[in-house]
Each structure stands twice: as C-alpha cells, then as structure tokens.
Length: 510
Ligand code: XMP
Image 1 (tube, rainbow, N blue to C red):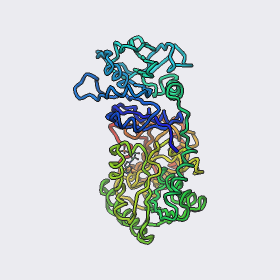
Image 2: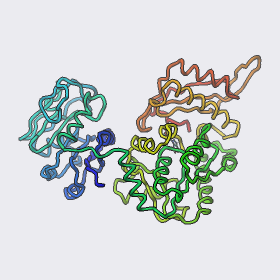
Image 3: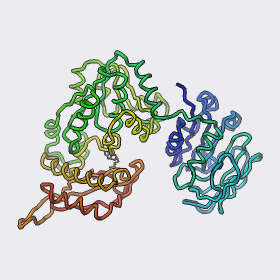
Image 4: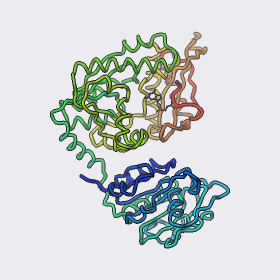
C-alpha cells in the first residue's frame, strides 16, 4: 500500500526528529530528509505537504542552508517552523532581522483567524527558541499571530497554502501545538491518516511473507526492544524458517535470560537457540579492569560465539537487524549509505554467510517500535525495557568482573528496578541501575566490622541519551531501596546516589 507522506526538510534544528515523530503520532507517515532535495526529487517523492524545520543558522549568513524558490510553485502545502519560517520570508522577498538577544522559553501569543489555528484558543502560550525574527512578511502574505517581541509570529499565504510559524508547535510547551499540526496535516494538506501501527504490522508481515517464504532467516537476539520486535515481526512471516540466536554472556540482569527464553521460545513458539556462554565470557574478563578492554573482549567473544552457532545453521538467506529510523537518519540519510554503514553493526555480517540484510524496523521511531511490539503481543517487560548496554553488567562493575560481584550487582539492581516499578516511576525515568564501585568502605553489621565495595545507584531522565539529568527520586523511595539492598543483598554495606547530570558525567560509569 502506498501511504500519504509528509516531507520534513531538515535544516539542522534540535527538534527535527521531534517534528517527524509528532507528525507520525497524528497518523501521517513522514520522512526527515536533508534540506537540499532538488525540486525534481521532491516531485518524485510526492508528499501531501512539506515542513521546513528549524535550524541553527541565520538566513543572511554565507553558507546558510537555502531552498530553491521553485518549491513554492509545486502547489504542495508548506509549513515553515522557526528557521523554516524565516527562510520562507527571506526566499519570497520578506525581511528577517537579527535581534540583540535570543528569545527562549514560553511566550504569550495571540492567534488570529486562520485554518492553521482553527479551534485553537486565540490567547495562548507558545515555545520560542530563536534570535532572528521575521520583521516584514513577503507580499501576498498576512500576519496571523503576534507576540510582544515578534511582529510576525505566524504568517501565511492561504491561497498558496504557505504557512510560517516562528514558534515550535512540536514542543509540548506550545499549548495546543498538536492541534496546530493536526490542522496543517488534515485541514490544509488533506491527510486521511493511514499511518497506524496495526496497518504497519499487517502490511509488513504481508510484504515480508512474499519476500522470505521458504528462505532461511537468522537473527541475533539480545533481549533489547529492537531485536525483539524485529524478530517477532519476522517470525509472523517466516515461522519455522527464522532462527534466533541468543547468547547468554552472563552479564545480563537478574531474570533476563530466563525471560527471553520464556517469552520467545515458550510463549511465541520461536525457534530460539540459547547459547550458554557465561563461563567463556567470565574467563575472558578475568584480570581485566580497563573499561575499553572489557568492551573489546566482550565484542570479540560475542562474535566468536555467534559465528560458531551460525556455522551450525549454514548459509542463510537473510540476516535480521533491528536498525530503526534514527539510525538511518544518523548514518547518512541516503538508502545506500545506510545499508553500508549498518553492514558492520556489531561486526556480525562479516562472520555470517548470508545473502541480504533485512531491517524490518528501519522506518520506525522508537515509540513506534514499542507500539508494534505491543501489537504483536509482546509483554510490557520486553516492550518498555530500558536501554541496556551491549557489554551489560561488565561496565557496571568497576574493576575486574567476578562471579561474586555479578551476583551482588544483580541482586541490588533487581531491588532498585522492583521499587522504581512499585513507585510508578519506571516510565518517566530513562535508565536506572546499580553500579559496584571500586572503593571499599567500612561498615558495621551486628557487632562485626564489614569492608565492602560501595554500591552506587544511578537513575536519569533523558530523551535520547545524548544529555541526561539525574532523576529526582523521592527520598522515601530511595530510602526503601537502600534499606532493602543492605538487608537483602550479600556484600552490601553502603549505598550512594549519583546526582550528576550528563554532561559532564556520562550515564554509565564506565
Ligand atoms: P553514556 O554512558 O555514554 O551512555 O552516557 C549513553 C547510552 O548508551 C548506552 N551505552 C552503551 N550501549 N554499548 C552499548 O550497547 C556500550 O558500550 C555502551 N555504553 C553506554 C548507555 O546505557 C546509555 O543508554
């Protein structure tokens, strides 16, 4: 099925992926592509509407991203946001002015009559993040919103369906921002809303079935959301012909390996090969303290184990990868560039004989992947799983990894997870985990002196792991967690809470 599409042209602003996600959330498929698409490429793409994103430049700067003015003659509705709106003004003969200070934050805004603001309360609040502003709109345009500092906070040429907004409708601080996007998509572009995750599942399964029936498919299952959802989708299409290899490297959290087997083999009936490589990995990590060396050894060992299993299966037709849309955007946009850069994910493809890589989630954002997982019947524990690093608990134990430290860490981490869940904080916290530090301190237990490594708790809020803030977990929840760890976990005598943001710290400790 051919979906209606919105083309989001990327001018490098920080909210660009957010714009694309917000469009999709409203049931309309969109792609985020570099701003320099030619008019012919745009015509061929055949969008029902185009959105210009914000960006860090000033339109008058040399080298600032520009657009071909012929884009305005295609008859396709256009919405320019922030830099995008300044570009509309600049390209069509309006004026953009540089302000002395940057305007950033919530602002009062007044909307006037416009299809874009239909049903939106006229006296409202929007989110601004800009320095330049449109001081004079091009001829044929009229101003449809103002703020005390922005004479043209929104402007339009309704006849040509060209709209500019200086504020960020995609940011949730813009009250009724979703309604504004909805008006653009449905009221102006005439969208019908054919992008839903249940449609996606039906269409993908059908497409995959045609492609892979009778072929052998191999998937490296990590227990993470992406590989789990990718494998389940493929399983719907390939059934028995899909083999999932799950390497238990012994560095997983408490109950995780068991859960993978119980969900994918027992419940979904997948052909899952579980490789117990716990001893092998622990041996390889013996005496190793340096974090990058740990990562290197784990990566190498993983490939060896996977390779041995793949050899048993023989040549496969397809190797499944859980690539998702942000990976596609980040690794160079063009389809061919993407396949190349993902050819080496985890080093796997070069060690497996396969004909083609198959990436069933490459069009989806993370929140869409989770919805697909739910559509496919995966439990919340899998679908809502927090990010977990490939080297697992090995990089949450400072210094050498030992069986004893792994047990202490697993037990402490399980308590932390249980209490966060109980307190209902699991959705708002991005990642939460325990760490065994390399500092031992004195404690007193009963009448005896103890001397054990300090256990640190780390919990952060984030949207993309690029930056993160330490989570303000209520004291009573922290207290319960600490008390339980001290009472229930062997070798625990002191708990600390990490209150550092990223930057300057990273999320993980190693
Ligand atoms: P940092 O610690 O760099 O982490 O702030 C950012 C995100 O990446 C995850 N992370 C890793 N994931 N292999 C992975 O697969 C790794 O070596 C690794 N190190 C960090 C981390 O959990 C967080 O989500």
